[in-house]
Image (cartoon, rainbow, N blue to C red):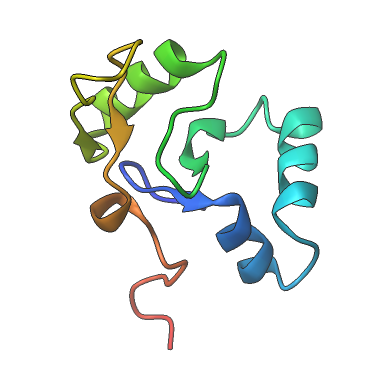
Length: 96
């Protein structure tokens, strides 16, 4: 349900579901997340999922997800998510 161009953290998903915690969400995503847009569930620091950075980055760019440039000190030069702008609160327009 997370819209294109937006993300939720593992903790956000757990809170939204009102069950489990970030680790449980991560485990469920690792086991069953393949058929869903897995790149929209992210770490809270905006660092891209290790081992899947390039696939996720392609999806973020295609969807227009807000990114922050990698710092000059970053070894891999992979951007981070701009969590302030990309984070979705789980609210659907018109849902009160």
